[in-house]
Length: 517
Figure 1: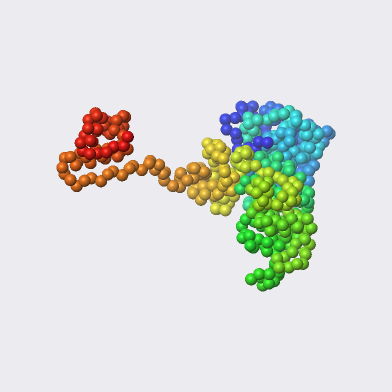
Figure 2 (figure 1 turned 135 degrees about the vertical axis):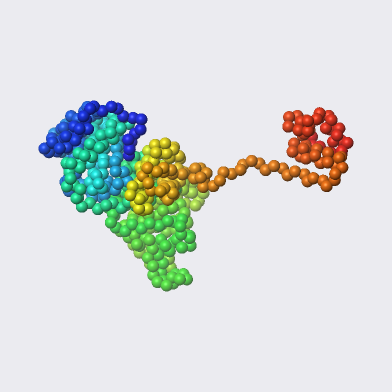
């Protein structure tokens, strides 16, 4: 899967004359959507190779109408129930315009799900999909797509063609569906980023959606800052426990002496300061989900209690012998190698087996550079809203290429911090330069360059004597200190003093100057 948020540079091809005008004319003249899709089919065949064209009519409040031409196994309209949550995500304008090129095996796009329901060819290797989605005035979105029964049917040139036709397509959507601007869809929380928008996460998403439906423990593995908590949120939202309690605890952020009381609660009088009975995270998460972040920091005593919860589904508060039943689904996340911890005895083998029924590895950002433009765009928009800027900045193509090439050792968290820092320095003007410093660039711009020249050996102090022999002795001694006692050869004391090495040695002997060989 490839995602484009802007026109690919140095790509594209010449468009037939009047093509944009024909799209605008179809928007005005077509009597209904069925006529419109047939007209668009004829227009786009002049610039693209495809087997079916798809067009979404956004006016229906309860289901989405996918018009397809030619008909798909006798169907000109493919129905799909609308999801308010998905609409909220799509209308959250961290990418007003998005074009995707999908192939067989790509996952987590609604359009592919619709096609797979009606089109058996969508499951074959000879399947390609390119679609362009545009949010219109933050109230509804338009979508046009092209299905091909050829492998790798679309490339950057085709993507550039679609961006070149974006203006007449926006005119079409706004002209045909003006009443859709009044749809009462709540604006999505700009703090929430859906992982389904990341092309590099598609393989992981397939596993995430499978494990979310099963009421079993989930173990999320990955480096610091890769978005493990976001994955846990996605599992929770897709599970049968959604809308039930979702409690999160960072096992590495609580002192080991307090962790068990935090997890399992404590009875009044269990320790100094325990003035009343207090439930722990397991009781608060009852019937819901508990996220144990930084699981590798869990001490062995707490690991033993956790194993008992998984096996017997009961807990005991600190200071109590009463068993309390709990019904909690565990999601654990860690950046540590638990197998190595088992070998060195710092993690229980039986607990690892219990938790790793379905481990999910989240690749580092350097392993999925295609996600970098999407994430940068989201964070820039997020910070623009927080800081009150009317529009987010734009990254120059060379700047974007530099950031894609950077390995981001701190992953998504490092990127978020870098964007926040750049936004604080930006003047808020649309056409002004916007630069994101990361890695060595950050420290190079923050601190003056270091002087790495090795310090010079201190010169021997001058004698207060004015006698010629004493002055000569001091001068020869200083030069020998500079050459570390070397008399002859290139850079030696004789060369510096411009005398024959034999003459210098004789003079050193007369002045009683020792030398190093």
